[in-house]
Image (cartoon, rainbow, N blue to C red; front, side, top):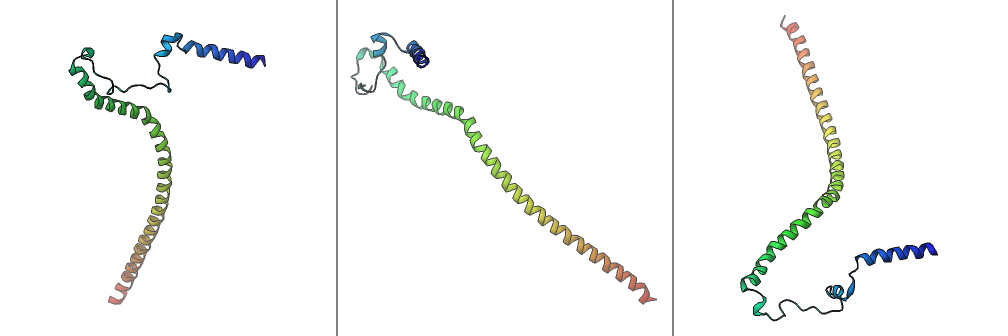
Length: 137
């Protein structure tokens, strides 16, 4: 029992290291029970900055969105490639194996047919040549 108590104590000490201390640090982080006002709902103050700065955030959103998309794609790209590439390679290997087997059988049949035709023509020519001089004499 003392081992588990010691382990829990160490875990608590570890977590306290990263927990903000004091009420000021904890009030900076919103929690789910707090209601946060949207920026559009808050009234604009004249001292909040020139209008050009406030308008620039709207034009920065597409750029930010594009950078975010690219960083996500860069991060997950190798993983997606691995998960897609391995099954695709296995399927392609199976399809290629079946295609090569069928092609090999067809080529073998074609070669046998060509050899039979060539041998048959050669035999016919020899028979014709053998019969030709004896009839003509």
